[in-house]
Length: 318
Length: 97
Ligand SMILES: [Fe+2]
Ligand SMILES: [Fe+2]
Ligand SMILES: [Fe+2]
Image (cartoon, rainbow over all chains, first blue to last red):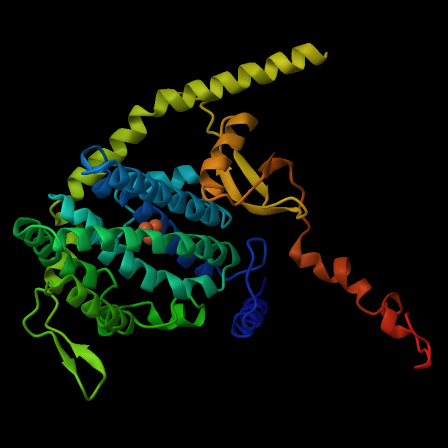
């Protein structure tokens, strides 16, 4: 194809997206669109998968059967989210194994929030409330993104997320209405998760690279800073209901803007964690790669069994 | 990893959400065989009663039309407006038609 022909195709392609048409896997697409989507969707999938680890840490120690079944169901949902997203990503021509390989080798990133430890039961409440809360803010606009399989996966994900956030908030509420000690536990979890949750919405607009292109392709509909403000505005009143306070002395309602003003985010910490120096990066990868390696014989045995059965069927019918 | 190691193949999953509706494509997953694909499909795609029936088809067995040929494929139907009831001029007095 000549350069002029490609340029022409690109224009037709951008116009389709501008008209709100969806792009499906076999449609022609610019190489950059394909690569950007492979990167974003696979990283999103990795985040769902690694995101199971901090919460999985508490399944066996959940304080009641009610909490245990809820947490188990929530973690299972996250596995499901990872699988919807891997399957959407594979339609772009990358194999599941390549994606795993990128995750396990450290080439692909996942959300930095999952590199923090879950040291008390209150952390499970804080994660559902804040981390799933921030994830919802990120994900709702993606239900209308231009790539069909991604948009469809996001619709399913978003339907399931609200249970996650509510179960988290309920854990926090129970602790906050409990003993002094329990309430202190909830406050401590908020203190540790608040800033990382704000960082989860991505670097500030001034520092974020792909925004303009991503807006065009509807991979983004609002900027990171707008999403962060939305998250803060909706979360602060929820903390008031719990009766605990955000660890930010500069946080206060601004009558003029109609939004909360908030303090400086420690972006050095964010970049440190992204680069692999967070408190749990090594631990997470060790758990993930270990599970994959220890599962190898199971995968091989299942394949051998399937092949044997297939041959048996052929022998019978001939 | 052994030389001729085979990965679990990819399966397309179709779910009937309730009787009276058709099976609809829900997504795909990997499984060693059809039975496992059915079980995994139940866990991945119907955790909240989204289905009453599941079909699994190994992805390699699906033949798909090529969107680049959409013109030859679908446009011939476009100008055949006589296939639609509104093409036919009838007086207003004619009822129930
Ligand atoms: Fe999720
Ligand atoms: Fe998520
Ligand atoms: Fe979630």
